[in-house]
Image (cartoon, rainbow, N blue to C red; front, side, top):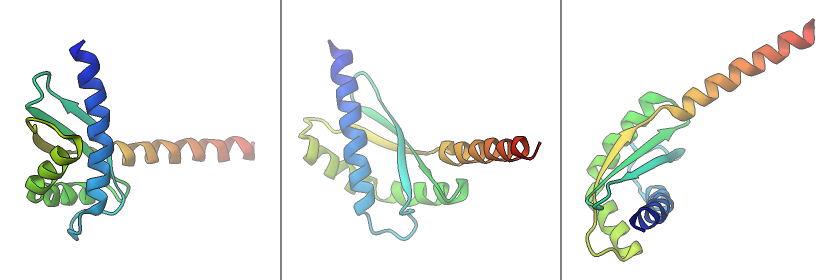
Length: 118
């Protein structure tokens, strides 16, 4: 039964973290930042949040620095919104999955153009 609770809480955390990050006013944090994945430990004491920016890996890393400075605020907001008894420690990790997906899409589009020419 605990697995269902962790899964449900993980999705709720992902939704709320996306909303909280959009409200931050730090200029280092990209406006096009997305929460890709949230991993919550079974005892709900640690949370890894993978974020990615459309602008690229460098902007994602810069955004993670801004998010690390705002971790206290994010943690307080998250606990108040989800009404958690014990708030997990949050660790933000840069992920380049959006940029990687865009590169693959570009490659596939270039293949379609070559096929049309033949």
